[in-house]
Image (cartoon, rainbow, N blue to C red; front, side, top):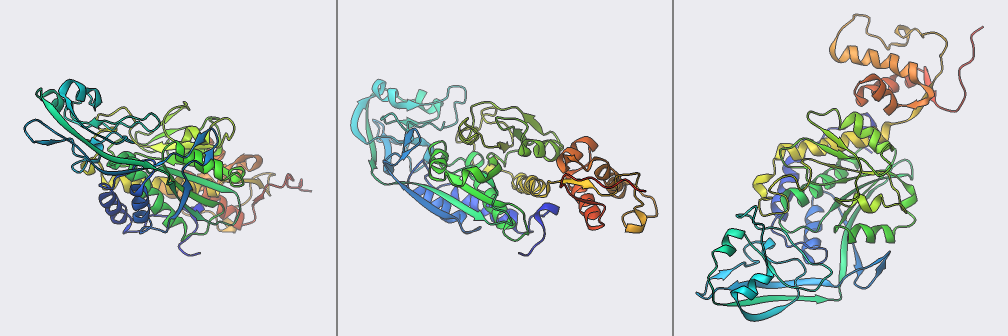
Length: 445
């Protein structure tokens, strides 16, 4: 492999931001749902960043307590007002059609039509994102102000859709490592025209996979691009041989808005990924670390009691707490390129820390070894990064006792994980620490 060592820090390439934002812009108009051509189109476009394998699971396939649904095909959907004006046309905005609407054609009076219209009165100028995946119904989503302005009369309704046996599509990238143990990165692919909530996670996952493929790394990294809920459940059901190898993982979503990072802990709350997030994500400006709760994104599938995987979630502003969430306000203007790039780098930093983490033992534990002759100390004292590195040497020597891994040393010292990793690498090269084998150094005579 070329490009460096993931565990010792890898930077995004200079053209990464342009590549990710180009994907977000191109994929924004694709019509996505939990099944259908829009998902395939999105994953094929992501494959231009790095190859994504598309997996098709036939409708009717049992997956744990669920069944893969019929595939949803949308041809056109709109309403014609009494004056001939076409309203709520899915061709104008993907969010106008209630997700998984069954077919319908007919003419309805306004009061009956309103039973099939979904709005958000608190956000009167935005189209909400609504769906009915498992209860057959049809409907349209619209800005509340627009619906309030409708006049009585006969409205022609056209919902030209079809639910047919087809398949559920998910994507997968596997980047082999030196070990078979895996780190899982998951993002959802089913939301129509939601730029931040949906597309930034896909862009970051694809770019991080592309970057890791150029590095030397310890673990195998598996990136999955799944429709929400049913997609993650399908992946878990189809991969019983992979699940036991998953050491830890991240669900990533909503990475392009103006907010600081939010990390949600796994169900167990003190796993490797949670501890890494504390010393990597938690020290970024304004970051928030929150405890597990059984709602949100696909972390709740991976962390369900039977699987109990060590999977946390990384996002920016917490979902449901900002007006643009799941509305037409989550458009391309809501996504900031710099925030997306910073998120991709944060994911790389988190995965790098996971990859580098290990437990060592001080091989010269009696007294303090002389570091100068080993070329480990700068003979001219200094501050800043040099001072942090020299502190890290002593922290690593002090806590390399077989009971503290590098994350624990970063937690105890308050130093950056990258600095601790650098110091440990230098001490290892110098023969002053070694892999923990349960044996201590001998008492000097």
